Amino acid sequence: MHRVNHADNIVELKNVSFNYGNDRVLKDINLNIHRGDYLGIVGTNGSGKTTLLKIILGLLPPSSGSVKLFGQDAKNFKDRSKIGYVPQKVTNFDANFPATVEEVVLMGRYARRGLFHSIKEGDRKRVRFALEQVEMASYENRLIGELSGGQQQRVFIARALVTEPEIVFLDEPTTGVDKGARDEFYQLLKKLNEDLKLTVVLITHDMEGVAYGAMHVACVDHTLFFHSSLEEFLKETKLNEKLERDARIIAHHHQ
Amino acid sequence: MINLFQYDFVTRGLEAGLIVGFIAPLIGIFLVLRRYSLIADTLAHVSLAGIALGLLLGINPILSALIFTIFSSLGIERLRTTKRTYGESALALFLSGSLALATVLLSLAKGFNTNLLNYLFGSIVTVTQNDVYVIASLAVIVAATIYALYKELVYISFDEEAARVSGLPTRVINTVLIVLTAVTVSLSIPVVGVLLIAALIVIPVVAALQLKKSFAKTIFYAEIISLFSVVSGIIVSFYFDLSTGGTIVLIVLGIFMLLSFSNRNK
Image (tube, rainbow over all chains, first blue to last red):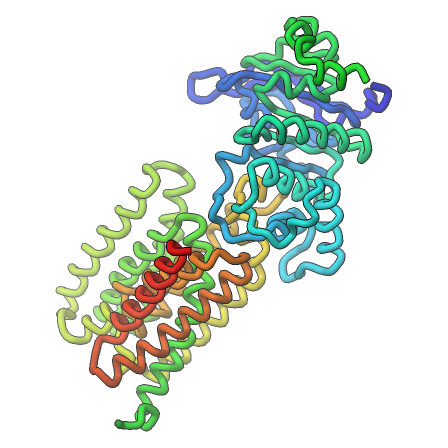
């Protein structure tokens, strides 16, 4: 917990509301994300958590309230390479897309290079390094569509890492990933948060996944009704009782 | 057998054909992967109204087609992004609307003649030296723009949302892509004709996709397939006195079926 710098907010939401037509999707959200944190944002389908993410990322303007990224207005935030983003795989991904793992990860470098600037050897080195971080280096020349769901998701993390971000957002990253690969995936997120000092924001409906490594948890159901440490979240939801039956996860939690 | 190259029109036709064959897959790969294939077909029909306008006003029909198609492409993109129409219905509006306009303009221009057939189905015989210059300069513009925006186009085709988060101006790039499509359609008219342009933009790419290679290699194979089809199509159509555009498209379709079939049997 000492790694979190509570004085340094990467994301600041003040009284954020979002209406879609007459529906109030989000109401009066106040949320700060501190540097070094691993925050799980938990909510069911239709709770507005993906909308919240889009507002934080500047993809949607809030109906009211203010959103700041790195102290600047999110709408005008230009230094986008500070943000890594791993989208929800199932909805955004064409398995027949003709691209190798290297080509996909290289995309993360594109925004750093301007028009006419081609990819340099340095970019390829970054790609290789990122693939090593997610233990996918030996798959460099494989087509993305040939990999398993868990492997694909690791490649997307590598793509987020090559932009050299300070914060990484993941939207339901484990959809379509089998149980074994999912645990490894959460372990990887924890490692990135601890070893690379990356701020991690995990948006998910998978409460057990959050229990696996997050430091703080925020629960969203149109409003933010809970935002505290993981320990309190587990107590509050009685998820700890359920997890005690799952010795593997609880052992990890107390280690 | 008569020598192909003793005729200037064959040389000109081959020149124009090679340029069109080179440009079409460059645009096609991004249209196909973004599920925009129908846009090429729509713009091709739109270009016919431009041609009719040119015939009526007595200006070069390819230039009038170019201008008309570019403006229509901007209109389609606007309808699409503002979501005032349901998805593809914007395309249907433009496709049938411009076809209706074309027939009215053609009847005004008394343009229902053999000349029209050349625009509809392509005819290398009618490609003038001037056409070759126009086609070549448009092709340079398209190729240079794609080269400049290659990285951005690849990223947006693969994952538009992540591209937006990374700070790429996705809306501008989408607009550039559709305008380039309009230019490509217009420059292809003399060789394959209005009705068959979309085939040359889409099918070589779909055929190359059957090979399941990297992005860069897919473009490379699409180019080979396209250039081979255009050249062999022109030669075959010359010796057997067939429609050039139709022959080219049938050859590229044959290659697609071959690759698709061998792919299934793997």
